[in-house]
Figure 1 (tube, rainbow, N blue to C red):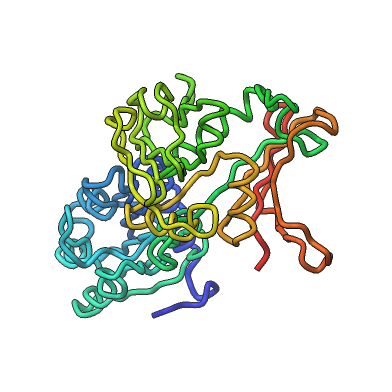
Figure 2 (figure 1 turned 135 degrees about the horizontal axis):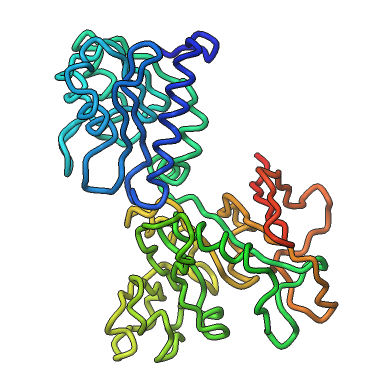
Length: 373
């Protein structure tokens, strides 16, 4: 049963909101699985609660049912994503809910994963359990925006991080860019890195900056655990030099994508993975790059690159979100630009974005934007 939002009881909203808060606890640790929370309740009383903590470990429903015990019989389960119906690394959660004897299951969002996709709901209903869906669906999908993107669109959710001065510059003419933004903004970037499946850049950035592309969090940061994101370097001609951090530091897995015309046969690449990506014109085909990452179960891709790659992702309609950090400084006309985009001759062709949220971080401003439909 798909209920209208106003058809649910007030207590349903309360419990689902708590289930979503629980799901958010897995923001940094469930990759490639979705973040899921579950509440078992009878009326206002919460009998059990849980969330999916790590891929390969028990799902949210199992933790909640374990806490509720025999009291789950006849109760209502609130789950932020359709319970799984298949054997993976863990047993089906739909079977666990049936065995526990719950009377009703309220689901925020249906799971598009082919082995679940309606099968979990069908199992529950076949057992005589009342099932209602759609309560806080948008919030549940937003929490797992990369998972839904990978399953439904066959590509990850692409988030492009940019930092600029008030006059739209990213670095001085000589390339110096440390630091445009302050400490609070830089710490915020690390948390966005930590929740991502992969951090993507181009070989030009590696040559210019020798970045580590790892998550670096202060010991006082509340993010205690995360799955290290895959470092992805688009290096068409294998220009990444020996001694680069991404090749040698071993702090995170690294994937170099290159053209078929070159071979990664020398010792530079002995500690990283290299793979061929199709070309489109004089660059790697970015659509195919994203398909490669989706096939590797990447949900959210965090891009920290130069103006050419970032501009290409935006121009090709592949940038789903922009994290724009603005520092209250001027760098002058000779500073390096934010993006390289095609020349426009009509204002009607401009790239239009909408603000999702904005936040003050120390002296800097972070604006999160998405392309308008």
